Image (cartoon, rainbow, N blue to C red; front, side, top):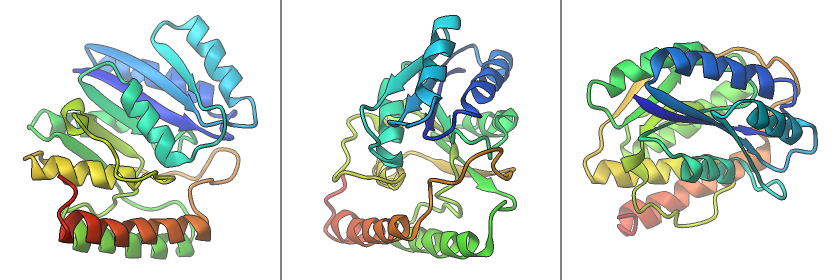
Length: 236
């Protein structure tokens, strides 16, 4: 398999290099061809500079830079759009997911699934995050019928056909953009599967992915998507 693997980086200077090097090792062992894309989402630390150095040292690594922080959803879109190979994978830049488990996702893809999503076996964060994640994922299943129990798991493998002709219906700050993409792809016949993956405490820094503001935006996205996408049928 030929895989473009990207990860957003925001305040991740401690993990950008070890993650990129680990990905190069894992992909070298399991992919026929690969590239690694670091999406610097306007990070105020050295994440972007480290990514640039890695790109100079390794032709399989590329660095993209947002001029300012655009949000996780836009970083995901940038990674998807920059991918050059048939399969696209991504994870977070904080190394909470073990990319050495990529073969679990590859096995499902070889069975004919166009989207293979990780599902955390055990969340390595507090009760509040677990409860909000449970509520969010229940809403996603009810509203969109994707069958995902862990839609916010940031370890996914997707065939690039999932994004053919895809343009988001609004500006997304969060990864809900993938819910819209997957919903449209499933309507075209794409198959979606989940596989269990590990989840570890952050190695450094603080999580940027969850705040009450983020939770409100996700709730709004889910409500808007249910009406615009599913009820009114405008997500084709």
